[in-house]
Amino acid sequence: MVLETADGRRIAYFGGSFDPPHRGHLAVARAARDALGLDQVLFAPVGAQPLKPHGSTASFEDRLAMTRLAIAGEPGFGISLADAPALETATGPAPNYTIDALLRLRGELATGARLFCLMGADSFLGLRLWHRGVEIPFVAPLIVASRPGQSLEDLAAVLPVGLSLETVSVDAGESNGVEVSRYTLCNSSGVTAPFYLLPGLHVEISASEIRRQVHAARGRQLAGHELLPEDVSEYIAAHGLYR
Image (cartoon, rainbow, N blue to C red; front, side, top):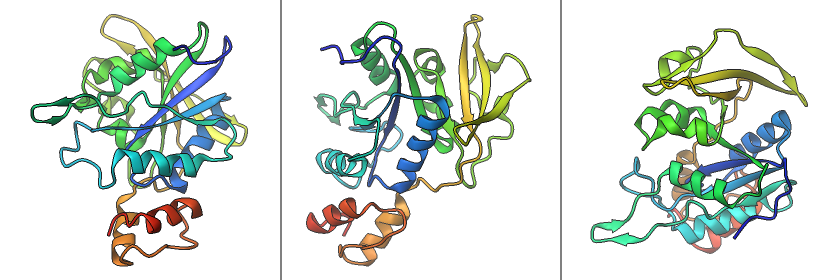
């Protein structure tokens, strides 16, 4: 089914465990939306991440429900099931690969719509380990958000093998109050793609500390948590997650 998008729409795929989704995720999505004039940011909870063999703590259904609650009322935010759980195999759930989700999603968009791939610095630094990671920027140009403790000062050194920065010059500036740097990536065949870095963000987007705090609270609602939307906190408490 083709998504209802008009020609020229700018849409970002934002994949992740969202275990749980929190204000850091929302801050990254807002910054990307505002800096690059995105019409829509699609939050895509992943079924089974290949690089996380132990899986997510909460079920896909719970993570999807929490993500819906987290983005409710946010202009331009939506849900994508492009990275929903794949078919079961003899050894368990089949791994979800971002390249497959992006190709699937791009095929659903109306002609003329532009698809981007939004990720945090931690994901970008591991891109060289991803399945067909070198292809991803050419399916959907990358938007990378900085993260405390994750250095992106030397981009060329962390790019997947086969990718390079075409020029050393950087188009840097602010858009709607958000700092954005624009680069050009080039693959071994000479194909180029834009690359966008949001270097001024300093929001924590790791959910592990939240899970630890909820576990320490024995599942009680963490009202007023600085990173956890209230509706998500209520859901976690009501469903006894992360105990």
